[in-house]
Length: 272
Ligand code: IPD
Ligand code: CA
Ligand code: CA
Image 1 (cartoon, helix red, strand yellow):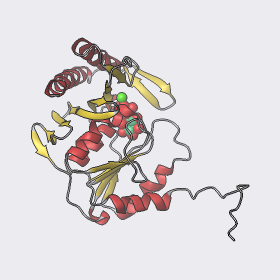
Image 2 (cartoon, rainbow, N blue to C red; image 1 turned 45 degrees about the vertical axis):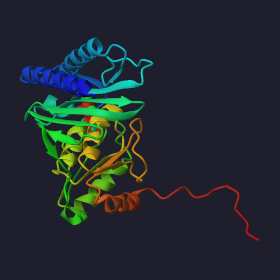
Image 3 (spheres, rainbow, N blue to C red; image 1 turned 90 degrees about the horizontal axis):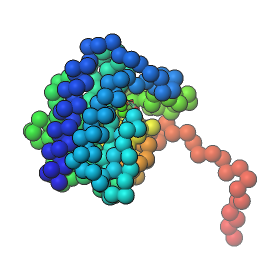
Image 4 (cartoon, rainbow, N blue to C red; image 1 turned 180 degrees about the vertical axis):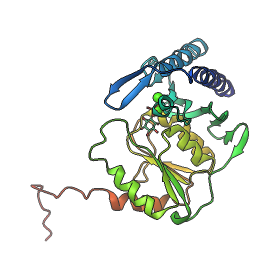
């Protein structure tokens, strides 16, 4: 396992250095969908990461955001976001990272998130704690929502009818504030490091949350879906907190959730 993490760290640092080296140029921006952008740097970073992973672990699967990876029959699969925070990067807003998470049968066992703008390296292995630049980190101790700083994110597509704008509004009134910094992987690391007390997002992909979700649990926090059910790497939702404010945050999600559809034509149970 040590080899997996050490290799992932080496690769994330190399990709981060490449991103920084290319960060000052004007970028070629391509639209995957309206408002969902990708730059040439995302692709260059992905090429580097996938090439390094393939040569080190030829049997492992790789799922990477820009499509350069490939699934294999192996129980091991790397979930890679070669540049999380692309929109920030493209606009010169320095909040972005490289993230690699290794899953064994869909359970994340090792993860790295590297922020090249601050030279911050977040690492975790299942059962061995969470670290920032090799120093152990822990979630915050805030026990009530009114003393919390929380964070969320919005998908770069399908923004109409977004329930999350309701949640954003509610949490803004109930907390010290809600941050939408633009990198889900770094948001999760901020929960792990006690900088944020909670984070949720409704429509993420596995590469956004693989490494960060492990960081949070290894830092003593809790990660579930929005209803408090088990976190699913391949599901869309993530809800991470320091554990202490999990139930209070969940009550806010429940209040904002659309009420269930009326029973309609469903047969009515008759009691005798
Ligand atoms: C995005 C970021 C953002 C989140 C979006 C993601 P990308 O990833 O993580 O914070 O709100 O849902 O798609 O496109 O920058 O890799
Ligand atoms: Ca991402
Ligand atoms: Ca990305």
